[in-house]
Length: 287
Ligand code: AMP
Ligand code: MN
Ligand code: MN
Ligand code: MN
Image (tube, rainbow, N blue to C red; front, top):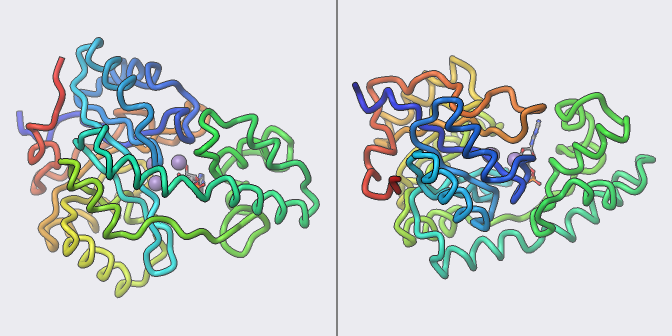
């Protein structure tokens, strides 16, 4: 069997960031769904790595360490996934802690902005949904606003609130691209551009992101992800070839009720690409 035909799912979230399931429940769900190589990639946090790894290995499921770092690039928030790093690397752990640092103040500003639009108590409301107080995110606000009856689902929250130009949006300065790539790389891992189709870049800006990412030592790009269309699989397969990047595959699963794509339920990587898991095979932890 070609190594491209491996049911690898290298992007998802637990309640250590903005998912709803515990790391152990995610491991079980991945295994039940036929995932053959798994990584938990909580936002800006590695606090769930040991639990995820232990649960996966106990189920016979090979595991790569993971995280998803929030980066500001050309005024846009970009996500960089790290895979196969040493989870207790001091510089990585410190960099992630610094990246998490501004979230509480930002959340209070988001609530103040929502209050101006007539929605009060959103900070306290969002906190009810938070598993890790350092990781309060727009997702937690969205869940609160749905349960408070403001919007019917989280997608409509993000259409009406919390995004640029809408009530509740607060611009935020995340990590620098070069820092995020360096933290991952120097901890022994591979840096991967997450869901590039989601950023609203011009072609010139997107070219700059890929070029600078490679110049900093970035290794891969997500080609098959829950947030890409079929046309985007093709577009980013071509970009992977153009920039000589490894290809990754991940559902970006957050919650059974919210996520379009379940763990493991993705098309295969296009066969002409080199999977990231082939290049970092020595970083896979096996049962
Ligand atoms: P934050 O890191 O606090 O800015 O929150 C970003 C998170 O919000 C992402 O990781 C997604 O989980 C979620 N999110 C962002 N945009 C949307 C959207 N349009 N629909 C649903 N969830 C979204
Ligand atoms: Mn998220
Ligand atoms: Mn993301
Ligand atoms: Mn994600």
